[in-house]
Length: 585
View 1: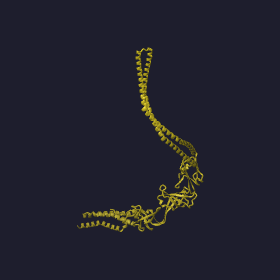
View 2: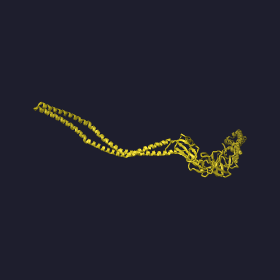
View 3: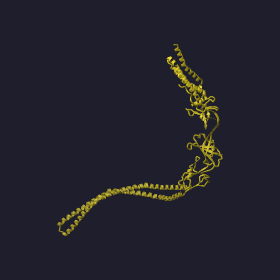
View 4: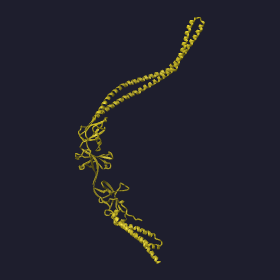
């Protein structure tokens, strides 16, 4: 029994030993808070700065697995004390092996942490001169330029005969370009001839118009009279003439029948009478023969009258009906045509006369314009200067190559174009362009330096004369630079390029920090800040300091508010440095 109790006490003491070691390790970690704080920036850099703290943290981390295993062993004690006592030698052996292994890992980790540890990169805030320059691309432009434009009134064919060369020096009144004038002279002559013909045609039309008006009026009156007569004839025909014709042929037929009957009756009467009288046969024969002939004539007349009646009723009267109808319609059409002619033809004649007059006026106008354009067949220099082909647009010569190709003998040039520009050698100015992002920094009167294209050429002092208030294209603004007072070399001519350096900001005692030291707030991109650090203690926690920024030049940015001269700031984002290792279960 005593032996059993002794074994039980030894087992409990052995199990409680790892718990005691863990408590001691926690107390040691509480004494060294630098190890417990989260790591800032790169973990390897922190390890190099604080090797002792890293080693202590590694030791504490290595102890945690062993302590966790001991805790699990203590919480899992069996109710059977004898079994726990019997397992003691085996558990002790396992703990010793684990401790030895952890010690080897800790020894290997310490050199790696020392190698990875780096010092914090800082910057001391100091005042220095901050100068901000804006560099613009510019061109030298002559103050006095005279465009030689081809702007004809009507003529479009301009074939070059002679032309001065690009870059030639000319004097006022000198012939610059000669064009072929043969075609324009021929068209002017044709127009003059057609104008004489049109003038005669207009005079004739003006004289003919009153006669035409009177003739049309007479035709209208005659057509009205013809229409009236046709309607009267139509009415008379149907009311009088036609019924009378029908009645006449009927009566003619009736009369022929009557004549036949009469002759027949008379012949019958004579034959009866001659049978009873005492006339000689010869006399009787003569009278009877005459009467018989009269009867034959009456028969023929009756037959002929019937035929005539049928012809009149079946042929002539229907034809007469058609003719009278057509005459009436023809008269109505003639009247309508005459009235239309009086209303329309006369108006058309007047319009045609006006059209002839307008056409002649256009011809006269074109003739006058061609006479003026004939003066463009020779273009003379408006002033003394140098000949530049093309035109100067925003300080640059546009269409130069195209115009050089066109301005050659036998080639044609387009109308309404600037052929060349006469440029005075001096004075010159500089015309540059600035983007909308730099436009607010520029102002009239700001000093500038002109850098010519020649590498070792002398630079010239200048001053901004004007800045355009509105964009001139491509979101660019014109900047006119005055060179008054600068002595320019002879070789410098209009059209050359240059650089314009404008000092837009110059402060001798500006507080300047590197751009990379300035951070942007995640929730407000307009809020800027830096990390203020203690230069004497790299392990001290950095302090966030909000700042107000000013001008920027290269990698430097001006701080207007939030820092003082002598402050030390971190060049890194302290919020992104790695956190120290946490306890692992």
